[in-house]
Image 1 (cartoon, one colour):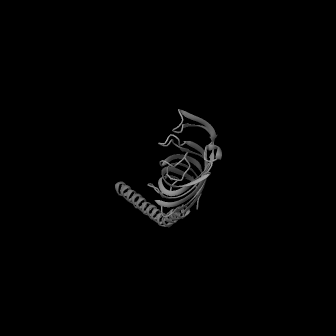
Image 2 (tube, rainbow, N blue to C red):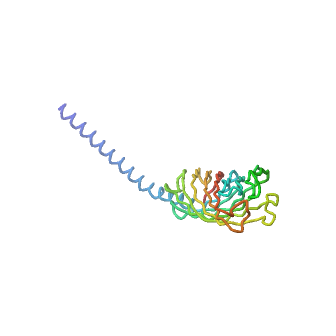
Image 3 (cartoon, rainbow, N blue to C red):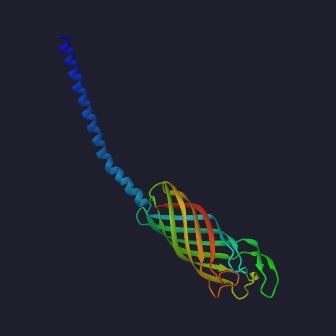
Length: 232
């Protein structure tokens, strides 16, 4: 009788445990069915939120290196810019950018003209610049997450504004075609984020450009910038 009683007790406990396990599995399945659409919806909302991005970058530096012609100057600008990006899906988008460079007073060491000897040292503000460009941006890991590295390339125009004292009495403004490539990273917390960016810009030479910049050969500039961005 004792063995029979123990057997019945164990059988009842096993039945209850099986019933409880079945109920737990049922609850988990029901919860998964209820949460599934919510998760998909949240992912869709995140994807929709990353469709448009607007950025302002008040901290930047633009520097053009020395050209092959030693009579052309190298110079630096304090860079300010803004951008609008339209993302098409999670992995690529198109960006429009407008920016300006504020001239920095600096010393320039120039080669003397052929009739002269040695070098000429002048102190003058660097040319101010105004640039606009359109780029295609690729996000290898997608742009819906908090951290979004990217690479970018595009075309644009750059205008340089020279002061007469720089030795350009007949030309005070020149506009050049440009190409640029770069990379950077965006970090978002919700809709707001920060961005760090690097660009290498090629400025095409012009025969009618000022002697001090972009006449004899193409020039190359390096730009670094950082700022805030918001996405919708």
